[in-house]
Length: 390
Image (cartoon, rainbow, N blue to C red; front, side, top):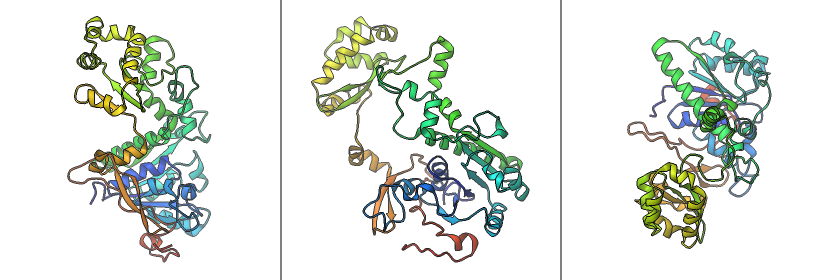
């Protein structure tokens, strides 16, 4: 039994932001019913596959963020399906959708309608630019994806090499961070309802979330009047805090504290640097020449050797590939790679585990992602045309 096993969530989301949010809820025990449009979530067919896309029910993208959910296929243009959905709303705790603003209203299934069927309902939306109910802007109704959010929210402007172009962060943080904040908002609304009996609307916008994530750039602009820009792997106010090329890869070193700086100078066999640049301000002022000293030292060492010399004394780590992550015993010891069935292969695949650890009700992926409409009988009492062997 998970911490949220008392909650039923109707998940109308697709692609990444919404499904990641509801995945977190499902990992924590919520009964998440994924309400899919005819044909299913857009990413069901996205690669990669283990072997044969014709035989496998879905690819890794869908599997990763939809594990542990139930699936029900409904068409809101169909009166019977719409009635079935409303019957589920009456018993639900949470409804989540990530359509453009106004889409649910086209089906007369907006928050105000659903609240009439269930006054205690928590209705949550994830949109590119938020919902008019919580702050109307000219951007609402525009489509948005991770790339758009990262560009508008300042992430790309401060990411990349100094002499290079604005660069997107690798993981889809415009989706993932927004989804995580939305999950927090839902849980706060659940707690409020427990105290008052009152449901509410929870709205999280991707653009807003990226502004929250780039908080450092925001206060820098306010304090200095200058727009922060790209600094590669370095930090605007901390040094050394950077990546250094080694003889066989890269390692990162974070020795901005005076105690760590002294230890780093000892490892470099340069105690004179610790004496000459004793304060953080000194080191920032002379960061370029000091960086060159560290870079020369790192270039002659293999990554493991560099990390071994600093481990326990200075925060340092190798820049790992995914293959190296899979070989890291820490990852296995923390249950951060979880096997799930891949339908159509007879094999298991591994997906990322849940980083939230709890002693009494530990979150965990609760089985594979669902087949399309697999749980119709479970949810509505009607027989489905699909089976777990499809």
